[in-house]
Image (cartoon, rainbow, N blue to C red; front, side, top):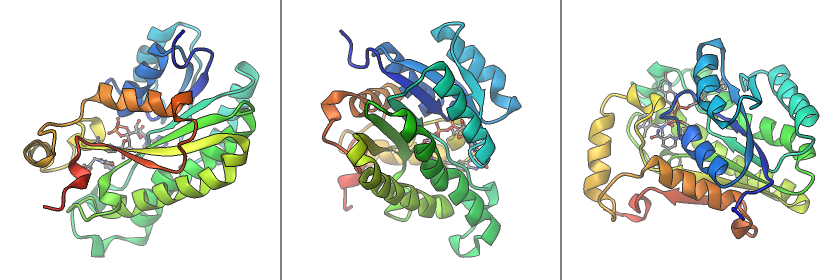
Length: 256
Ligand code: NAD
Ligand code: 0WE
């Protein structure tokens, strides 16, 4: 008997094998869950098909740009038809225009602010609303966040503001969906070398900074995010909702 036996889930945010979404999907799969996947656009279709295909040739894989309401509606209509119900949803999606992550926050343009919040925060609300009618046996929604939501991390800029909105959205969703036994939590991960991180100048210095200053004196491993994702999805976390869980080797507790 495995932790997630009989659970049905959907994963948003796999781009390649280094994606945090892929680490959590593998852990959910190993714990016995049956998963469907979405990909952002044609560019990533092959990647996701190759990865998710390793879980069986019948794995449901659908396109979904989270800024498009019709894409989201199509995903949940397909899930309703193929699965009938779901228990798990992973939100591992973020984007801000590159120039907004380079200069000063004070120069953030209205359109960059809008896009960052649409993709990285509002999408959790839209996906939760789509998933809730299918979570007829209760459910667990997990979203990925980062420490730049609560303290200033130079250059994280508008993404920090969008992550603050994501974490607050998780709390309001937890309140609304709690009576239906649907839990909503965030995992705040320390830096991980993914596609979304690699373009960031100074990222390898950031990894070294965490190694030097986190209580555990190292960086988080993708499989450790998988293990926390599995815990939050499991009945062991049945009384945990609206929370931000730090999986950052303790970095968040430090004052200096
Ligand atoms: P990643 O690039 O592998 O994943 C980001 C995903 O967002 C990609 O799959 C991309 O396709 C998707 N995405 C972007 N815009 C989208 C849109 N309009 N519609 C649908 N999908 C869209 O990078 P990652 O590091 O695995 O990021 C996953 C999550 O983890 C993000 O929320 C990120 O903020 C968060 N996070 C990352 C780190 C880190 O250091 N890598 C740390 C903490 C939190
Ligand atoms: O959430 C993130 C990064 C998300 C992200 C990354 C990109 C790069 C490419 C969002 N939008 C874009 N847009 C692009 O054009 N992280 C937690 C990783 C990250 O990004 C940083 C960090 C950390 C940590 C940016 C500046 C400072 C620290």
